[in-house]
Length: 136
Image (cartoon, rainbow, N blue to C red; front, side, top):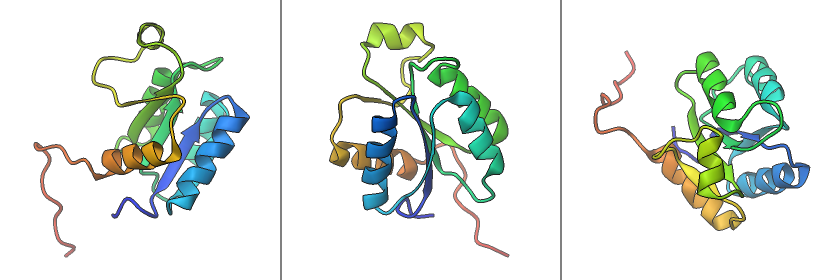
């Protein structure tokens, strides 16, 4: 699947961030679902019939932390890719459960850098994964 047109779930407790990210991703051709926290994100994922390629998750939120949300989303959809975002320092982000190597977009970010990072994550294939098989 080409990254453009993919469905992305955006999870952030700040309505302005949710709307801005949704508008930016929509302008780049993505379908966007949004949730204002972890519980809502789980409900959205459970209620959405089609594939969701990526979850863009804020690290620091009330209730469930971003890494906890990501873990719960993976339980429901094991193939879901995750991109974290945060406006906090690296030290604060690590305290909330992010590990070195987790993909992170630091706020504030431009819509161009958002689109570039999302495209990069969606395009990434592990060198250890098997090539896609043709349909039978």
